[in-house]
Length: 337
Image (cartoon, rainbow, N blue to C red; front, side, top):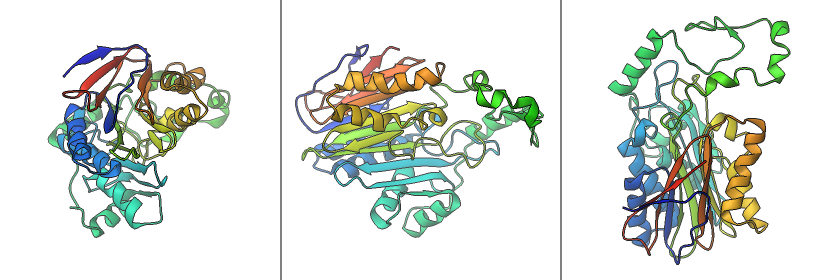
C-alpha cells in the first residue's frame, strides 16, 4: 500500500472503475473494489464497502459498538445516493440495527422516501429482512460512557443550560442574560475539545463503476456523547456526500453539526459543474465554512467524472484512500491543512 503527501494538488486516474473513501479505511475500499471490479454496480459496490467498515467497526466510529450518546446508547446514521437517478436512501439515529448502509439502500429501493429516523427506521429495516433488534453497545462503548459520567458528563454538546458542569437534568439559563451570546459564537470554543478524528471520522465513499456510473455512501455512529436524538451530517445528502453522474462526486467528514449547515458536498459538485477543478472546488467549499467557523474541523474529497480526485481539509491533517485499475492495491493520500 503506497502513501503520498499531496497538499491540494489533483491526481488524475486513467480509467474506471474507481473507489475513493475518507480516511485510511483500506479494507473497506478493498471490499468495494472487489465488488466493482467484479462487475457490480456503483450502488452495490459502495454498500459493500461501507458494510465492511461497519463490520470492522472502523476506528470505533462506524458500525455498532462505538460513540455512545448521553444515555450510553449507540445509534447509526447512513446514506446511499445513486448519481444516475439522484435517488437517495438514508437512516438517522437508527436504533437496534447494525447494518446502516444496507438499511439506507432499502429506504432508497423500497420506499418513495429519502430519510427514515429513530426506532421507526429500525422497525422498517427489520421488517424488510435485516437482522435485529440488536444491542448496538459494546463493552468498550459502555466503559467510555461510564468514565464520562464519572467526569460529570464533561465535555458535552450542551450550551446555555444550567447546571453547566454536571450531568443534569438541564434547564435553560436566563435568556436575558444570554441574549447577546446566542447571536455570537458562544459555546464554540468548548466543542473543539471533543471533536476530533476519532469522534467524527465518518466513512464517506464514492464509486465509479465500469459503466461510468457514480454512487456515494456513508455510515457513522455519530458524535461521541451526543444528545440522544441527534442526527449528524452522515444521512444528509449534499453534506456528507453527493453524486451527480453528469459531474462527479464528493465525500466529507468532520464536525457534522457545523458542516451540514453549508452542504459542502453539494457545493463541491456544483462548483465542478461550473468548471472548477476538484482541488479548487474542495478548498472553496471548506473556505466558505471557515469564514463563519474558523476553528471547525473537516475535510472533503472531490472526484470528477473523469476520475480526477483531490482532497482539502481544515483544522487537521486528513487522509483518504483510493483504488483504481492503475494501482496494485489501495493507496492512501495525505492532505495537509
